[in-house]
Image (cartoon, rainbow, N blue to C red):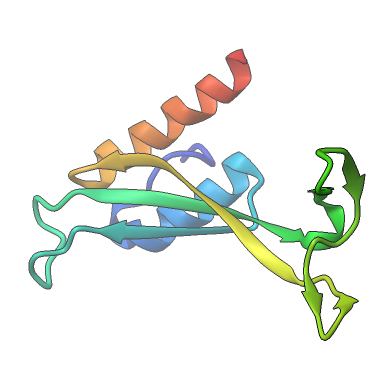
Length: 112
């Protein structure tokens, strides 16, 4: 089996693990509109995330000049924190459609 082919016997975990490898992201999860307890004919979405820290962001001052460093303050002191920046990148009504949509997203990244 190709390293990016799906194993339908273990599909949800398989898609998540392969998405992380394919897109080099830190997290991946599947969310759904889930009207019932089964994922049959429900729209599924792939959400990927990248670990971030506020110290690496650009802040804007009141006179619209940008500076590097924290824009977050607590008790008058600047502070930084870790977070996960997430994006919805694909959707499908079943695992095969979802996986095809993920691969299409990857192709768009390559062509840009």
